[in-house]
Amino acid sequence: MRELHSPPSHGPGHRPLPGRAPLDRSRAGDRTPARSWTAQRTIALIAAASGAAVLVACSSSSSGTAGSPSATPPNVTAFSGEPPSAVASAAQSLLASASAAAASASAAASEAAASLSAAASAFQASVSAQQAATREKAASVLSGVTDGGNAMGDVTITGLPRQSTGGLHAVVVTIQNPGPGTASYAVQVDFTDSSGKAVDSSIVGAENVPANGKAQPVAFSRQPGDQPLTPVVVKAVRY
Image 1 (cartoon, rainbow, N blue to C red):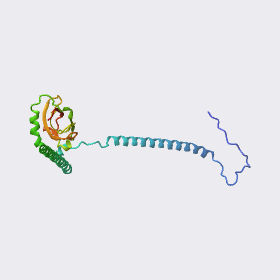
Image 2: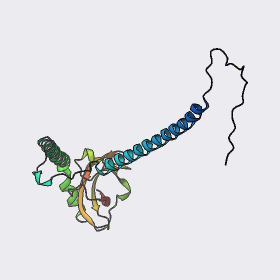
Image 3: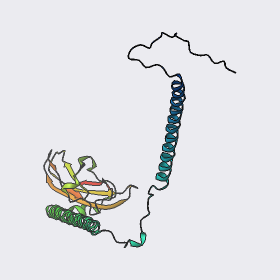
Image 4: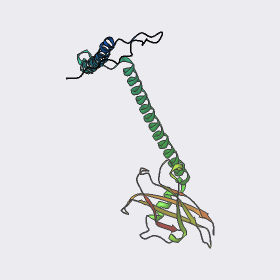
């Protein structure tokens, strides 16, 4: 048991200081426990409020997550299966443009083919007209020759660009007369395929070629120009 001590006595003649009330020990003792209880209660209330706030926040977070909206698939029954009018119009426009381009290309190709055919016909007619007077005579001369003839060394050939022949295979046959006098010539040019087989022949002639002079008739094939052919001099006769 604690021993109680009486406050010290200041004697009969002691007086309190002016302006200060005497200290009431009983009231002072009662005030200290009240302050301690109030602080503890305040701390407890703050802790309870904090816990409630945390619970509310967690509840709000959980409810927010659970209630968040999700993606909804489209209602396919509402689709008509037809594209929007703008898309359909654009597609039709593209198809029309493609058709027009194809028609234009086809027309251009047909026109080019017709132009090439016309050029080939014109080339043939021109060459045939120039050689009409000598071809029959040259053919007659060559018909009796069984070998290459006596003028193979006097003849060379040079190819013509197909742009100038309407696409046909054609060569310039250069006949050089070494003398001593004027002479006439008959030449046969064969056009052979890749195997060496003759698929076409052309006979040209030149009459009255002077000594040391030359003639340059043109030999051509009537076979399609897209077929690869090689021209070869097979007969050359001086008469």
